[in-house]
Length: 313
Image (cartoon, rainbow, N blue to C red; front, side):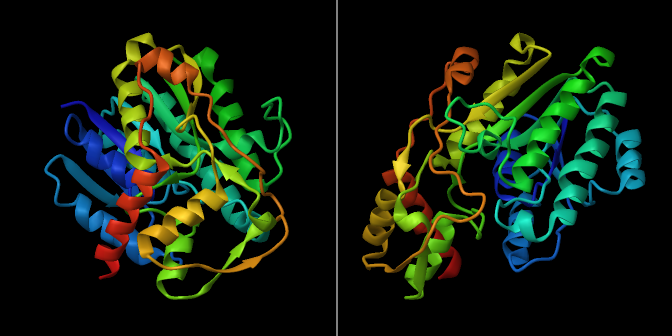
């Protein structure tokens, strides 16, 4: 079986992608298990992954070049998918050093090692945050340091094109949610608070809208891009989302319905770094893969709440 390295396999998308790809590829997953208040779910994800025949795990930080280099020397990777990163817009204002270490230095390490080994395909997680509030969808003016690190990844990876045969794909993710999700994301936080009868803060008085993208659609999109490697250009960026928006108020209503409770709401002003609305342009994805995400927010939230109630019993 062809071998794929997935960094950040203990993360939300990395976990689901490792499960998906292990059906057709031999997967080496790495993660640093960076200590934070959500470490338990990361560890539980890896426990699930270790049950899979074609999956192996190593605890490694991509900021450690020497250890990473040894991994590359012992393996011949067909593809490398870099999903290891420190996520979150608001937190990047408070701890930019951590974001620089993981999202820029770490990215540089994993990317240059992949180029030196001439892997056929290098994919990396970018973000819809690179668009900011630009209506013309330009990405030259990030409004958070997190967005700036993702834009840096796109620029760095493009700069090596002339000296490499590796095909490079950037994945601009749009508000991914679903079972085993990130506890700091809206769907998870709102569900936790309504379940515990705690008040939620609704930023911008609830006037946000997002392209809420269900995890199964996301990993299917990535899988199909890999399968179409021969049709890929040397460098491509894809919006990875549903291609439709839902209002924050709609999301809250669906969560209330599934918990059969009403939220206690505290409305607050727009937060620093927040984007008003997001919507993926999935034309390039559809043209390449003929795939259009079909999971509605209604069914996606139903699936998430079922998992949530089971996970927390």
